[in-house]
Image (cartoon, rainbow, N blue to C red; front, side, top):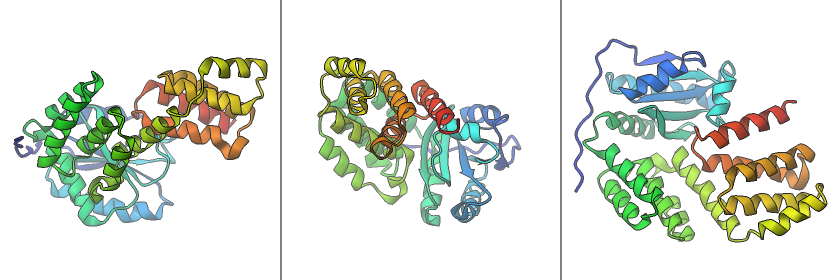
Length: 302
């Protein structure tokens, strides 16, 4: 049975809530999160739901008395960092711990769910081994020990049912075991406090990609078809699916970007939609996602 200790307050005098920017992001979020969890609220002045969520989130953070901090990022004034962290709609909220995004959600949640989210994030700083257990389970999953990882994630959830990282981890373990239907059903049963988290959104995208992989054609034949006719958009799209299915994610992104460059409206914008699914399935800081988003944005706004 896992046991958890309570978080400790930080008494360095820093304000619990502050406005941030691209210039201060590393100091305010990445570096600060190595000592205390940091919640980042991506918002805009014209966003109605942001005006509803912001005060509730700030109140919940201040009530934790230094156990967690909050940085507000205006996406209109800080478009580059918003793009790097794949902010597709606002409000979007990320929680950072030890320099990495570990939890989050999109949209305005009820006050009770916001409070539960903030308390869960604050507990990361003194979780009595929870973070270490999650890290261990992730390592098991990365090494192919999906059964052991699933058992560890399940044990964590027995103690912390609303832990988004563990919930997503267990779903990914099911997916690694070839049980996509079970993973999808598990996500549908997620408690409200984590249902809209970025971790679960990532797994949903991974499930969609896994199902596409099962239908992917032979990459060699598709590559030959594209070489014979570079304007065969369906062949290029199918080649991207086959490349992704074989683990060549960056190559798949390259083909989809080329398809978007040639005809962004083809098949109701299928290239852009597929790119967004791939980016969603990757970690926000994944180099392939960051580079791909930048290239896509440059094409859109060219």
